[in-house]
Image (cartoon, rainbow, N blue to C red; front, side, top):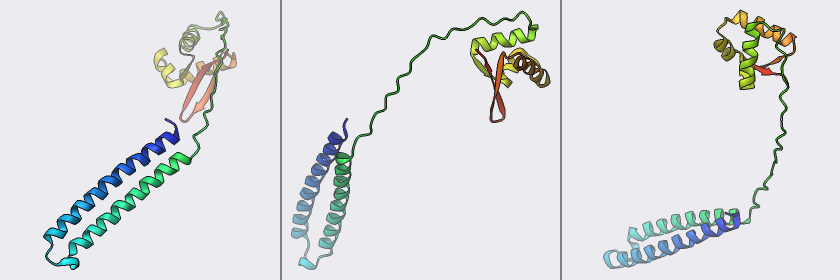
Length: 158
């Protein structure tokens, strides 16, 4: 919905509540007039006035919110169009790689990027072995490691 329509809706609800409050106050006043034996000094009149004042104050806030929403400018929509380029995955020459390096490259080809710890678990080697393996692959410019907190993100270079 537009802001103007929402503002009018809130103001309409406020008018309906105002009608209910006034009808309730009129009915309550007639009941107090017939039941109170103290006349105009009856404490119920003060209570009625406090209740009416509170109700009108709340309604004033509702009307103010409705006017604010109605008069405020809607947020401008920024449309970002993403153009998907057909990525040409170049064939990686794995002839000079050993078996663990080939396994690591295959996992990275499937996932695109992985955390170093996840890759270590999938390959099934230790921390030191993983670091050495990634050092070799990075030196051969197959991968790139990006620091993410306490982890490294291993990304396959294109």
